[in-house]
Length: 236
Image (cartoon, rainbow, N blue to C red):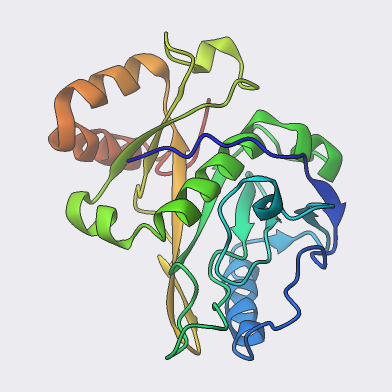
């Protein structure tokens, strides 16, 4: 998977209004309601989103389909979820309407349970999901690689992460598409299904073995995580 390495300004605690396009698709509210309903079945979403004073697309980052670039915080009893919130917004120029790039992406971890919004915004886990979301926008979605490979490996430049979770080259190793257990893989929207795709951070030694073994190793390690009861949740 290619990696978009652009850097852009930090986020701002915001209700999500920053970056909202003036010509938002009329289907956007229905899509956003579908995403909200999906997360409501899993946990409690913070009212505020992590957003930006200046939309990152104006600072060199990829544009998102509906322009809006925000991140949602979902709190469950034992984990915290950081999710993109806007990748699935319909592009008002696309006919027939479709849910943006077809997905939202998220990182789920117990390490951030109880953290406030400012702490989450400054966390390396947020930098990781932010970087991944920009890659997804850059590629136009994940449907093809996930269809081709089932589980995808990815290395991201996240210098904010602690050294012990980074490879010898300073990259963060992740698996994309480990099947979530006990929850739907899609949100159902008025303009089509939205894949809710987890990104799982993998320890450097394990990731090196996954990379050496190719597709078979990726699938085997994903199944190992599921069998251990961790599944897609990032424990590092």
